[in-house]
Amino acid sequence: MFKIFQETKTIKWLNHYQETIDFSPSYQRLGRLWKRDQKQLLADSILNGFDIPKFYFQFMPSISENKSKFYNYAIIDGKQRIEAILGFINDEFPLSDTFVFFNKENHDEIAGKYFSEIEICAPAVAARFWQYELNIVFMDTTEPDMINEMFIRLNSGITVNTAEKRNATGGKLSNEIQIFCQNSKFFQQKINITNKRFIHHDLALKFLMIEMGEWTLTKNAVDKFVLEQKDFNTNCAMALRRVQQVLSKFEFAFYTKDRLLSKKNIVLTLYAAQDKISLEFLRPFLEQFEEMRETSIQASKQNQECDQTLVEFSRLLQQGSDKKSSIQRRREIMLEQFDTYLNMQS
Image (tube, one colour):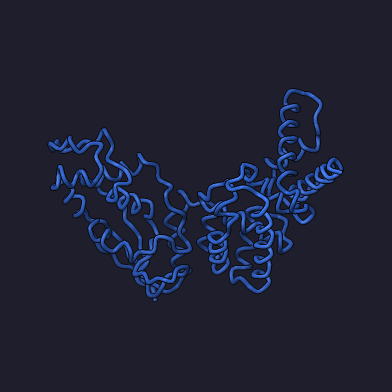
């Protein structure tokens, strides 16, 4: 079944029914990407009666994929705008201090005010906001591929990055990676890299590929892997359990939001080398390794004597970093440095 229909709904309707809307279906990107001034501009546009782009919702036939809760709708496109609208209502941000009505209405006193304040000092303006009509296109289908295709088409060439596209089209594998990252203490507490644009999901996917013997982590290779493993077979599930075992080791070794876990390719290299590094040495070794690497980089820039293998390591982090040869060479260098570190400890 596939049906598309369009309706207008007021902001009051949106606010009333927000609990029936799934903001995070599997294909959706993470929210909160808008800056404060962008949100203020949207509120400004609505109060001034300007038209804003359509929203796209899936009409939900059953429960959402990743929550034990019933929803009537899921957001396909327009998530940041909806979050901004609801955020304004909930006093998460005020109107801009420079807000003005373009039709010269005498309501200058609402500039810089929160919505709850506007409801008190200018109730007619607040009522106008509540009654503003949103154009919503509803997509009624039970076929996930149709929803994913709509999401990609609506966002293609504008703001969707590679990881987001994989997340939207990766089937059960993408769902499992998403759940894994949400429940992982490593990703939620230890790593010092924000999950903007599904960076955590991308890392977890590459850990999984390494566990399954795939060392080429270029865009094409990862896309091919996601397509081939879309159904998340038994081998894939077993490999993901191995990833969890490794990350449990990292969870024990590293601090909360550890500064040593702030560079994606360093984390990836450490994962590739961790099978040869004892748990007790993981963090102290990486700390010394990074200090020596930074020293070598600075010395190299000044044409001073330095450890050329560490300079090479740094170069490989930047150039062709997802190629098999680069990852394996970085692993080799890291383990050579670990052997030196161990000899110094004895």
